[in-house]
Length: 434
Ligand code: IMP
Image (cartoon, rainbow, N blue to C red; front, side, top):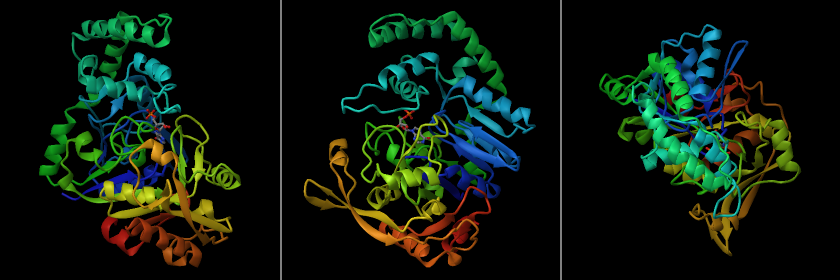
């Protein structure tokens, strides 16, 4: 069963949605396996632009089953808004399926996110998306006070919500020190039971479905969210999201064993961005960073926050490409660098006087990284109309070759703009993906 997976190798926003959208026609299933409403995917269909947070990017292809697995945390009012927006534009949702194992984000999670985002032992705010993602995953792992979508459909929901609300009111009072937060258990239970009823037609046992799909030799496309450097276990902890956003999360989030994934596409921007707090060794808080932000329109899809911008970090991406089992790179946003005279690429780190190409595990070591750069000449030409990699300016091709060499993986796909047509495949990319 040739499963393919699309993973962001940086701190998210690498334009994974575009790559998923391009690959979708070849697949039977598009599977979202982690994260929640912290993700923001833009899907374009002619004149229509759809902003999706939960629903997989294959939703506009009627032949594809779009699955949200139990690894995802779902915010019912937000997903219902997405569903209503799609239905209002006559999108058929009979190809959309939601796991009964998905954990539910409740109002207390969003309140906890707001109160806890401001405090880490590492001294800087995490700068979360404030969508309740971390608190919901924390309750999932803690087990005592967590509810899944399957629970919304059962008759004992009100008793369960009451138990949780009693505990949450005590915890929230401790967190804000005032005890003025109001949560009405009966009202919340009624509202969420209503959400459950509206979602019921989509809710299934997706783990069983996907294991059947594997047995039936169906083609599965796994759509990553966030980026591998935000992985809870392997990213820049504690400045990470609360799930496994690198390739290691595919199996745990979906229930499909990793041995069924044949191709992993690692999506990278031709530079780096990060939203929120945490170390970012190649960040450029100067005219170059500002140039990239403006040229790349680097403002968050979910929160609208300006993204922090910097040069491509080959140490970080070599690490996440290996971690995620990447077979091919998809390099996006090549057009954004077109006006620069030169481009820097970080090839190694210096930490406390020692040179290394190993990505450090501790945030304090990452904070004192001195990036070692190699300078490459820019191409100073508009590339947005180019349709073959061989037709790119020589310096653009050299830049791609150097990135590939430093990361240790071939470039399979190159994107020079948001449109589907602005995408080129190398020979390796064509062989593996077309
Ligand atoms: P959370 O996932 O909302 O808890 O946020 C944790 C960190 O991950 C913050 O730095 C967020 O800015 C970042 N983050 C979460 N989702 C995304 C995303 O889709 N793109 C980029 N950054 C993200």
